[in-house]
Length: 187
Image 1 (tube, one colour):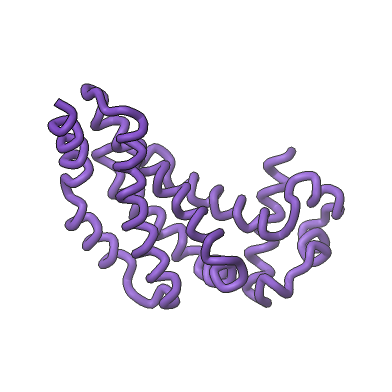
Image 2 (cartoon, helix red, strand yellow):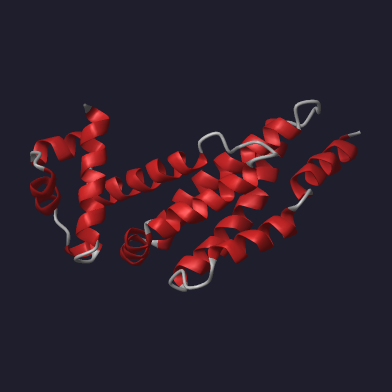
């Protein structure tokens, strides 16, 4: 029941964002739209921004299902772009209403999760420390997030598939190369 309520609130939020900006949406608007009590809202979320963050993470987790391997990470990255684009009014509204730091943190979490899956898989036969693996994942996540934030800031006008292709070309083999470089350096 808990997830059903959260999803209902997220859907109401998306619907309301098509009509007005995030800073004009009230908890009363949300609860009225999906037919739950204010208490139910506060049981799940501390405020609307908490709901926004949860909704973004939930959409992203769905987009990334099973796409954290070396062979599928590029598809996972494309699905992140698709999920962001499909929720354009929601994302643009959230980007303009909440701090850049909150958006960055959300995207950092998401991309670190994606890249770390690849790093873990590719470094299985190595002696890389967790610190080294995290450094590699963090290094690439900052690139991903920076490019995606620029695209969002510019109103998502560019074709995200072109951005995605360029990212894939640029990164081809680099995560594996980074792992090998750390391995060679440690010998």
